[in-house]
Length: 335
Image (cartoon, rainbow, N blue to C red; front, side, top):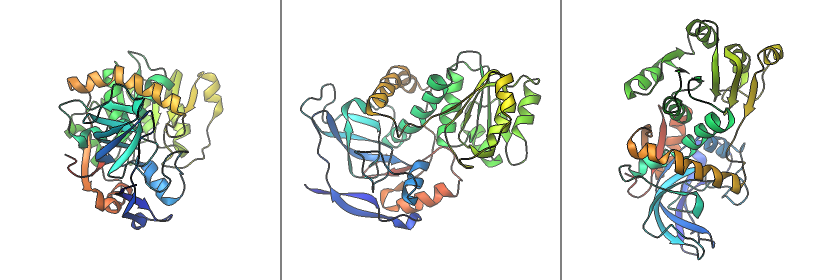
């Protein structure tokens, strides 16, 4: 096979273990397409994979990170219908996005709306799939409910704020650092109650702003010791969906609140799901979200781009936690 260039994880460690090297070129299976990647976005799962803590699922490259990418279809499998060479697509991936080319099941390839650049498109799949799944499929969010989004300035957070508003939330609350809250306001993202987690106890703010009622849904990208104040922040029949574990995997909580309020605590992750589950979610996103991107009701929030050769610098930037929204690698004309 003809080699291509990709960012490889040469061993567990810091950003310096990422190297741009030649690797075998992917070939499509009967129901796959190969995409010439123009842009690939970073996710915190990439950092964990680099550190040796989050192996890729079966069938995905173990040494090439990248959970979402956008580009141009260059080859299609013999049983593929509806996707052709030359199509602009974006896709959720099991891995392998930090590369010049990537193999994608044809059903996972979504058309890129004409007004979006490849950089913007690459910043959509992982975070909007995750936020949509957590809010609507896991939490059963409905019109008129209130939503609290933790880590509101991150990729999933900025997606969740928008989805809550277009979904008809009565109020959107969010926690972030003061600089990120300022960035959210500057970007014009929907946030009715900003909460600076460094100087405010979010459960107290929620109680004050809701008259003690609490919120209906919490999307928690933080985990750890947020669980107990999450439960204190929920209204009766409220749901908290744990999407990330930035503050750790363990928590102590008053389970009595869970019983008295008939509350639900749910966990979710996309990467470990079956191909059939991912295809079903992709079909829902195609139907329900793509039209909103085309109308401008939803948009990717991109903080900064890096050339793919500077993937190590991009990882270091993400680890510094200064980004608002997404960090994107440009691969051969990513804009």
